[in-house]
Length: 288
Length: 84
View 1 (cartoon, chains in turn blue, brown):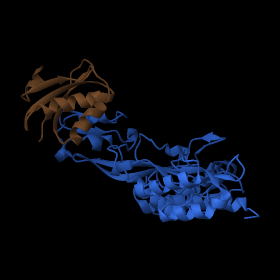
View 2: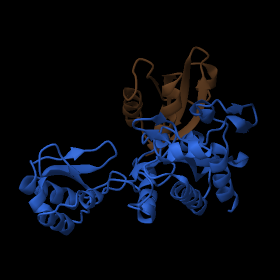
View 3: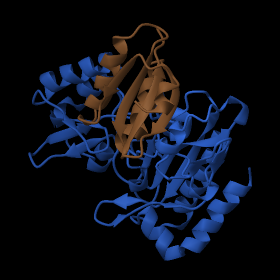
View 4: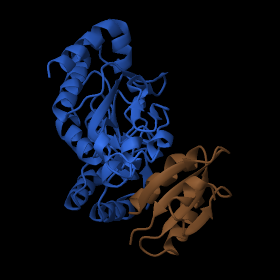
């Protein structure tokens, strides 16, 4: 290889190292999940072509450092045989991160991994004015730090109380961290304005009186690099996935349309105006 | 044991106010293992994180929670019927 197209390499996840002709190869990982088969393939490549080790990135990715320029094709081929794809860098939709969610975690309100896969299938690698990060966290414990992301999704429960099933045991009153539930001799009262949809009442209820449907709390414009700013919730909890993707489409489209090249989502929103952006999101929310 | 707890016919009382998470749940779980199906335990726990979380963990273990009693001394007693 004579003329090296570094930009093309970077698009394919080859991160140039300080050491000449060495690359830290970024792999495609969704929601922090890899199969044992994929791990074996990664391990083999790290031993055969790298320095015998990998780096776990801050966003649940895997990079194999010390991959040589001359080995790139062989490395990609061996990885692909093990079901491993290279990742992306640059101005596009990045790795979609997720906690373990309701499939694994007792606290999880939503199936985060499945959602991360769907987001990844829809947006991963899409070219945009700058990088764009999605993160999915299963509940209010927020292990995945939803608001750090350009678009963060937090699992929640839309709750209701079935009087006929309630034994008035009192567990939910203490399980609620918002102090939104009050109990009397004969009833339970929910202070709706205090409810943060965490679903702890549902999770703890011994009689099934508290019931919850999964919902999504979406935050926009988070960034935690050179500039630090928390993503903002602009619309109420979203009850279904179709509405969720309408919001995500609206955000990504707004970014594509309004941001200058090299301008992060947050910076673009602030320059154009939160009001304008909020209107676009509110419209997408209302379209359902 | 106060009257409210006595109403449930407690077979075993266990105090987990002397330990912190995750030992709170472990101690409660071990105590419940000593019971037979249908017996009732009263688990005394501190306000705050234990009372927020231990009932849920006990539920997830498959036992039947009957009542959470406020002991008015910064502790709560969870009345649980052993299942299984």
